Image 1 (spheres, rainbow, N blue to C red):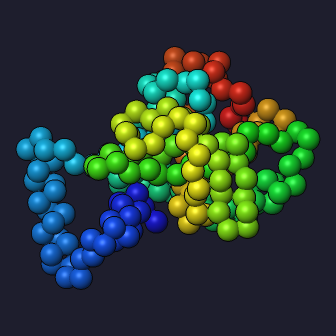
Image 2 (image 1 turned 90 degrees about the vertical axis):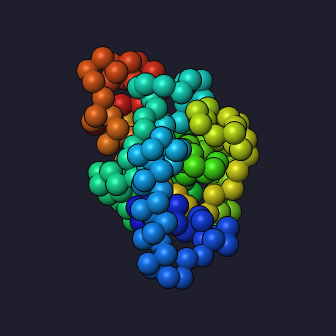
Length: 195
C-alpha cells in the first residue's frame, strides 16, 4: 500500500467516503491546484531514519519523502511482508538482539510523519510501546507517548543483532540517499551498523 493509499484509508476511517471516482478525481485535482498556489497539502511526508529519542528533528536522521516515492513504497511493502520474521525475533528476544521497534504513520491535519515506536511489546493482536522520535510537524503526538499500533499500520520494523541493523527497510532507503557528510554523522549517532 502506498503512502497516498494509506492516507485514503485513514480518511475513510474518519467517515469521509468517496463513492464516485469522478468526485475523487476532481478532489485530487483541486488539491493539486491548491498546492501549486501555495495552499498547504500533503504532497510529502516526513520520516525518521531510526528511533533515537535524543536526536532532534533534522538531517541526517529526518527526511521529507514524496507520496509517490517508489523506493519507499517498496520498503514499506517489504517490511509488511516480512513482519512475521520480526514477530518471531521479538518473541524469542535472544541475548544479542535489542532495539526492537516498529514505524507508524501519524497524521495531524495535512501533516504525516512516520515515527518509530520503541519499548515494544506485542499482545497477539497489537503492538504497544512509546514514540521514540521527537515529531517535527505533529502536535497530536509527542516523544515518549504510549501508543498502540495494529500490524496493518506498520510502515517498517527493525531490531539490532550483534550491532547490525536487521530490517529497517525505510532506513536503508534513506541511508543510501545521504551525502557522505550526513552518512558520517548518522554512523556516529546510530547504535548499529547498516550493511
